[in-house]
Length: 442
Ligand SMILES: Cc1ncc(COP(=O)(O)O)c(C=O)c1O
Image (cartoon, rainbow, N blue to C red; front, side, top):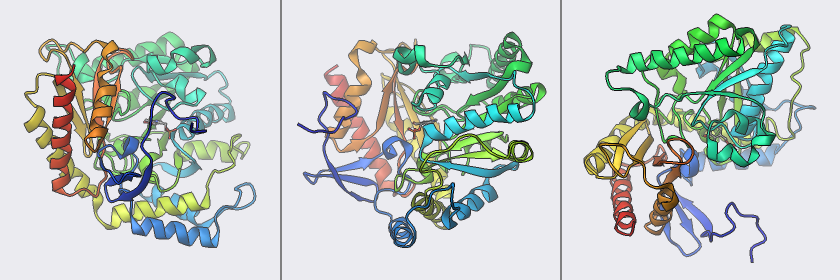
């Protein structure tokens, strides 16, 4: 028996022993095309020599130095790199080890900002249903996925949840995308009024919703209206780009495509591309300044913040993405993937929607396309898709509870940016074969 406390204790996992570009290889020598980057992580695939070399070089020189004693060169250089490219106004970076930690840091920075400003009554958070912000308690409380929250509910801080921006299901007949976005903005405004605008600290959202909805982009203008509302009431906007950021949607930051700058932005996953565990919170100048001119000390911290090796890896990842022009490739391959998915599954009786941006795509599975009826959740269709795809040598990221945390199934695709066109065909062929097997036995 394995002594590892695995994610699922009833499941057997193949042992990953190697990587070759976009493929992972198990101990039996079986190759799996990684069409989801694990969970939108491995944007450079699994054998990038520049990154591996950068890690070797950094470990040889300085693996780690605790940030309460020292700064380090890769951390400084990575912060410079990110700030130079970030939406205007984000001027410093707090480094952590993953997405949940990035969200926790953002929440605490928001709170401390208002303490420093003498507005201690600002304590309410508003987020959206069907969002995912991580599994630590603050991040879990912020997320709006009923299934993930349910058993931990007594441990979670109070957070208000408004509707997600989910046009496929929630845009009413007769509504344009813009009027739908207006309706959602009005809902946010109403929630702020209910809580009392002077008590609200921040609104948190993923620009393109990943794990819990399956690559759902916002309608045009939605985030601009959200930004206006937050500004009008002095509320901070926290954008969680842990999954959709770092080039995944075709721009380094997903918010660029919305034309908004958040006050705090979280990134992780593609930042280190899986070569090292790393996340970060980008911080606006006004928040940094409030703390710098106040206590001067952000009351937070972990042992591994600003880890030199992790920062060196992430810097090498980001330089590689830039030097190899991979963002243009994400846009081109993303369109190619969407076209192939539409060609193959556009008329599929059980595929209701194909959506996303860049190399971040989602397919929503439905029992009836016209009525958009979800499958019975007890069938755990998403689990069957994942298992069957692995049998066929394809990694994809299916999830259940798309509609409300209980009903609905989707498949998320987030492949590496280094794919060739032929890999797009392989993804679609293997996914097609997977769905055939699953629905033949369903
Ligand atoms: C949007 C978003 N935020 C936060 C997280 C949590 O990141 P981590 O699993 O690295 O803690 C995730 C993970 O999927 C995510 O998708």
